[in-house]
Image 1 (tube, rainbow, N blue to C red):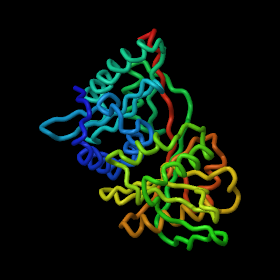
Image 2 (cartoon, rainbow, N blue to C red):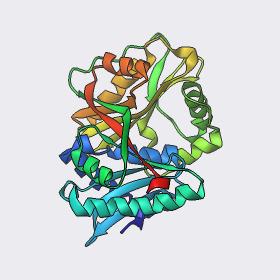
Image 3 (cartoon, one colour):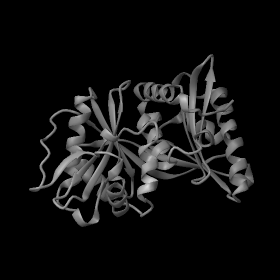
Image 4 (tube, rainbow, N blue to C red):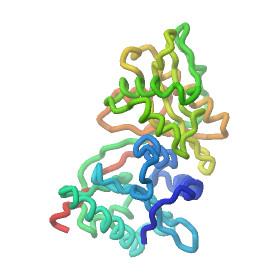
Length: 298
């Protein structure tokens, strides 16, 4: 049932994800999420191992990310195929792959994350033995109207990344904002993945030339919606309104690209993120929940 992702599949995959998001956003993922995982998460490497499709008559019916590192799989299913025997068979196919990979890692659980209130997938997973845990992730939304003019301290500027020669600056600001993992060489791999567009990585540049904050914006012309993923600020430049100004600048670019709404996700325990997003006009949209299967009992 599952077919490995191939490089030529990207346009069809993003179009399918956009159609699903447009028709039923509360039960799906924005196309930018998947392309972000391909570039920032997997560095464009072995995508045929991590992503699979279900097709019928050359039409995509489902896309799934299969991650043995996190012990989880993330599906998006054609709304017309949601619920019932077809979805059960699909989850069986995903579980067959995950079970083999997780047992090889001597891991004991598989997790699926989905929107609170998605009764179709909840019913399917419960039939397969999954148990609910807790809400873990939240998505917020903002209409792209009444966007304030970005306001920066003197001598700071907002712009797109200029080229690959700035990979070290990007590695530095990402490492300061989150757990250090980037080198210039590693971030170059992100920049060279097919779904990455350097014009959509926005940065705040400090007077001394360092990158003080960053945000990547993803655009979906099908649903006319944008996504911020990721957003961060260098620890030496916090509490100056830089990230707030950067997000307003990103919204301006989204609107100029004919987007109507913007979205952003965050861990529900991260009060700083929720506070930032509320301050730039985002409102709660939906939350997601983890369902876990104990493999030794399956």
